[in-house]
Length: 328
Ligand code: ASP
Image 1 (cartoon, protein in one colour):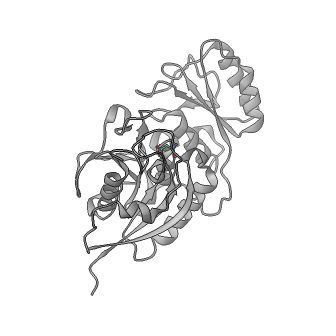
Image 2: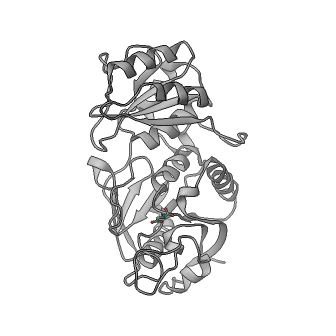
Image 3: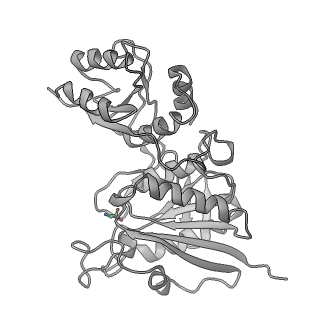
């Protein structure tokens, strides 16, 4: 009888698969190496881990779009019905927090799904990809990683797909969970969990994208001193919903507030998020002048955009949408 655990690697590109000038950490091309060459740089895996590999695409993660997300979620949902025990996804770091949150809301499995990547290309001195990938494969093999939602394993830490955010432009310790730090640590092959996300995810999530061929368009608008309100008109003519990256606790000028109220007549929901990156945006009647406007709570703009897009697939009630923002 075979007692090995089957871990499946889905490779999408990113800096972890990047190649550049020997030793340099900058000026490289992301997503240029196939996953097999990444695996050659790892210490041998134990015979208890049977690893299979599939290249989904080979891109810089700034090219990630809803089509890739739908491909990934379908593939994971399909393969989770097989003997596979856990999944690892290699991914560029720039949009890893977005992909992790999208999958956290849409994959229908309790099996571990772990994203990882690297800040330095494989050809850099002290490339961080090999250890990140090595630890992600081991984390995907751990029973403790089951049922916790989609996770990110990066620089010796474990993060929830719900709260993870890229917080540094080039350091190898590039992720965090805002005020919450992380779920736990990795030390070599071992994982040490300390926290869990309370937000609903994966098998308990109400979102089913299996029949969708695209996601409703939601645009993000960044507010700054003197920002013209006509930008809202433009985006409202293109998108089904808007997210505002407001100042402070999700704030903007009276002109923007008036414009948002006008959008109520066009049935455009507008979510107030913050450009700050820490803290919470809660109900505030001073900025919410109409029923189509509600807060993002602890989601940053790029994740509020994902949740609003998914919310638009299940309801057109603003009240229901806000409830989703309180629970996911
Ligand atoms: N631009 C790269 C990407 O997101 C950055 C990285 O992977 O660190 O694909």
